Length: 337
Image 1 (cartoon, rainbow, N blue to C red):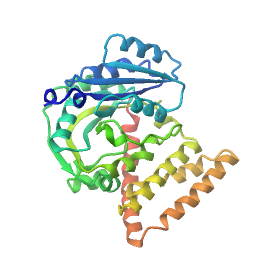
Image 2 (tube, rainbow, N blue to C red; image 1 turned 45 degrees about the vertical axis):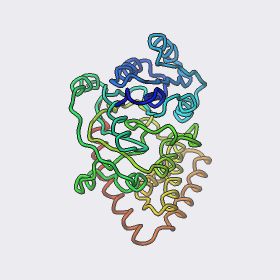
Image 3 (cartoon, one colour; image 1 turned 90 degrees about the horizontal axis):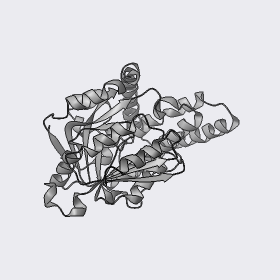
Image 4 (tube, rainbow, N blue to C red; image 1 turned 90 degrees about the vertical axis):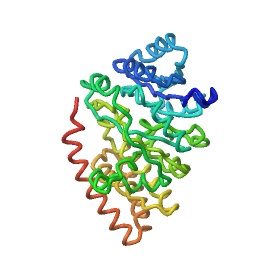
């Protein structure tokens, strides 16, 4: 399949934001370079690392001409992703966190189903594993056979409405589920025309999710587990709990909420995301935090007032189901090492 494409359309840009990941980066990049689809443009964005990660990026690039390195002052993951997007040369783009791993078939499989379906994005399932067993798990599943795939045309609606684990399994809609996370997905590069992640934000992926999904005409999704999402207790998402952190989450979901309503989509996932307002209130430590909270609370009230009674009941029901699932997640997956 890939050899029949013109050179540009064979190339997949893999963007890896790097920040103080010296202990994990080599394994991550090794898994990327071991892809069965070899036409790669790997962009390592050193976002002001202070632990030698920048030098390690340069060492890796010296061993493989498909790897390029961008060094910049620390600006956060959004700024690093944007630098990668600005530099990307491929017709397709995927992302990888600097401490996660890719199955060797990830790019080939996602490119194949995307092209076969003439889709704008393709996505796979993932393994949620502790860091201590990740490498062994990747090797164990390296030769798993390809699974089933579906094609659908309502990306924004699927994103907002199919997020409860229990309900999507009961309804047999697992393959229509995907999150705002950018890993485990392959995008046509043109989707990011005029779209960039907000810099200096924690929820940068949520902030642009609806912009991307509303642009998509078709999505291809497969049941293959091809990405290894490693759980580490010291990761950013596990460790930051400031009022500003929750402010970013609330604002990102508020933007998603508005975009959904404006396009006739029930904003159920965004409604659930707005519950971060409660955590923001508990995290108030300064007058500035309190002012942010008052502003966010007014915004959330304004947004919810736009819902009809039926919409509000549906959103509240999905929120309650999802909250129960998150409790289970925090007691199990979140604790992995």
